[in-house]
Each structure stands twice: as structure tokens, then as C-alpha cells.
Amino acid sequence: MKKKVLYSVYIVCMLAMCLVPTIFTLVYKEENQREGDIEIPKIKMDGKTNIHYLEDMDEYFSKTFAFRNDFIAADARLMKNVFGESNNDKIIVGKEGWLFFAETLDDYKGITTITKRGANNIARTMELIQKVMEDSGSDFVFTIAPNKNSLYGQYMPNNIKKLSDRKNYDLVKGAMENYNINYFDLFQFIGSKDDVLYCKTDSHWNNKGAALAAAELLKELDKECIDYNSMTPKKRFDYTGDLQEMLFPETTKPSEDNFYFGNEKELNITSPMKDVEAISVTTENPDQEGKIMMFRDSFGNAIIPYIADEYYQCSFSKAMPYNLTIAQLKGVDDVIIEIVERHLDLLCNEVPVVLMPQNTEIDIENPIGDLKADVHIEEQEEQYLITGTIEEKFVSENSLVYVIINNRVYEAFPCSNNGKYNDNAFGLYIEKTEDINDIRIAIQTNEKFHITKNKIK
Image 1: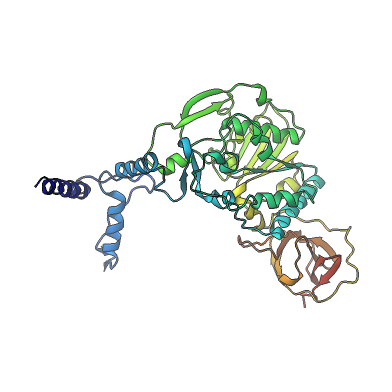
Image 2 (image 1 turned 135 degrees about the vertical axis):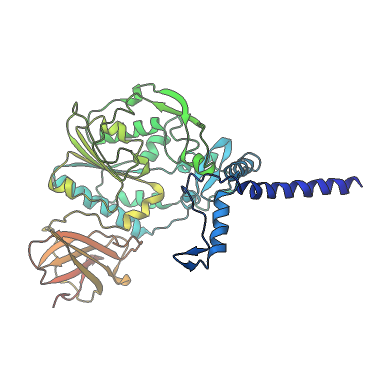
């Protein structure tokens, strides 16, 4: 008898829990801050019956039912605090309150998504950019921001196992040793610090990590700057991490400490968008000298105040492909390229926008005329964009690609130009000074040159 009563009470409670949102939705619509105001579907639209009305109504209800945000938050907290798991497939709940971005799992497990050829392509691309920048009078430094679990993997859950200790970063770092690149190793620098320099509930470093990284990058450029190592920042419990916000969309309370050196808010932003998270941000500081361009991703957001504090003019861009023509043609003192570890493969997917100079050092002698390649020429206002792919059998791990235009030789970037990874792609921009009457592609493999026939009739 008692069991029947308990079962009955349980069923009534469950039914009540299911009915509460339905009943209250009739008089109360939950605000969906992530997707803005959502209009109730109409049976008729533009005088016609909406055949998708039931589907639209189902979607509308799922996004606006009463107490939706409270139910989502309760579910997220239950999964995190009781089961140590996430109800968001983009977030990994780690130990001691640490959260990680699921997009970094391949790197953490040791699953490579680029080949040795791809790693060499990235290294050669950075070397070519550096050479063009230095020829234009700019100092250059390249750096890779580590994924959080590459530095603090001890807080990852025990049930996620590594398959290998070799990942994309290891391939790229190994390849860079064969090229002349001014690379600053943030893995070694941050990994050597006793202080935790990343946020527990965010996918990025904290302000202290950003400030120390900024100072070291500027030292690589021989730029005098504030020594943040010798300063003690103020600590305030006022930060809500991006992963925390993704896990608990309606959270308003701070989740952890952050650090402040006092100059984080003193930004004179001259670009239309005043947010450091904008695609393009420019700043001015009349008390300083020099100009810098920094190509960065979201890790660069926190760096902006510390870089902007040291230069008269700064340009920070998230746009890809990297557009270096301003630095090349108008000149800047320094150029930084920063990219996070999990996005390394993107460096293979877009041809940098920079005018490649003629290569007068290479001598293509006695080439074998058996190379096959697809070539595309895009005529732009002041330049040509030449892209293509080479038959795979001609491409080795570190072979270089050349484009011969009207008997002048240019080295191409080993990158695709469609946002897709391709080891056999190439591309470059050249200044449009004359019509292209003759174009051939050459590749150097095992000290031999293979070349295509003329592609212009």
C-alpha cells in the first residue's frame, strides 16, 4: 500500500514538473538572451498557409517555455556538481572546477590533423612572411598560444586518455627548426611559471598571463616596455569565464579571480568598433612612439592593452587571410602573428595577402617538363592572385613551389585559398604591372625541378 502511495506521489510530481512550464507559458514567455526576441509562429504567412507551423511552434516553445533558463541552469549545475560532466558538448568539466574547450581534445589526445608536409608548409609560410616584413623594414615575431589543457592537463578528467604525446604543435615546432623564424615559445615560457596564468572557467589566459606574454613578445622585438614580472597586480574576484557563460548561459555572478596592473582600461581606441573582441581594433597613445601590426585570435584580446600601452599606433586584426600589404607598403616598426594551438591548421588554408617579390636567387636549371598542376589567375585592381594545386606524386615533405611569370620567378606560399586544408596547394599575390603572357609552375623535389608547360595561350 505504501509503495502504491509513493508511486502515485512520484507520478503526480513528475506530471506537475512537466505541466508547470506548459501552463505558465500561456501567461509568461521566458526571455532568450542568446537568441533575442523570438516571434510566435503564424498559421498564415503572406496570405498562405504555413505548412511548417507545427515545427515552428515546437521550436518556439522549446526556446521560450516558462522557467526555461532556470531549468537549463539547474541541469547544468546538476551535471557539473553531481556527475562531474557537462550538458554542453563544447565544454569539458575537469577537476577542481576547471573547464576546458572540447575543440582542444584532438590536440590533448595526440590526434594530428596535419601532416609533416602541412607542418613544413606552416613553417615556410611564416619564414616567407618574416622575410617580406624584414625587407620592408619591420621586425617580426611569431608565437603560438598553448591550449589550456596543454599546460594544465592535470585538471582534465581521468576518463579522457591520451593516445599519443605527438600533436600538431610538435610537428610544427619540429618543422620550424629547419627554417629561420623568429619564434617565441609560449609553451616553454608559461609552462616554466609557478603561477597559474590561465583562467579556470575560461579557454584563455588571465590578465597576468596576457601581460607577461605581451612583455616577452615585445622584448623579442627589442621594444622597451613595462616589466610586468617585477610588478604585483591587484587580484579581484570579478571575472566570468567564457566557458562558464556557455555552460550557464544566464549566469551573472563572477566565477573566479583576475589580475589588474592598472592600465587595462586606459585604451584610446580609434577604430569604429570600441570592443577589444572586434575583428579589427586600432589604438593610439600620443605618449609613445612607433607603429605595430598584430594579427591575433581571441587570445590576443587580453593582450591588446599591454601592447597598446607601448606604441603610438597599433593595429590588431583577427581577419584571415592575414593582410600584410599596409605593413609592406606603408611600413610599420613591428609585426606580431599570434595563433592558438588548436587553430594551427588554419595557417595552411589561406594565402597571406602580401605582394611577393621576384626571387632572383633561385636558378631553375634543366627542369623536367612532366609536372601537372591546376592554375587559376584572378585579376584584381592592383594585383594578381595566382592559386592552384600540384599533382600529389610531385610533392614531398618540404618541397618548394615556384611560379614563373613572363620568365620571372616567384616563390609561392604553400597554402590553399579556399579555407580547406590541402598539402598540395599553392598561392601568391604579385603586383599587376603587365599582362601575364606566360605562366609555369615549378617544384623542387630531391634537388630536381619539375615544371609545367606554359598555361597561357
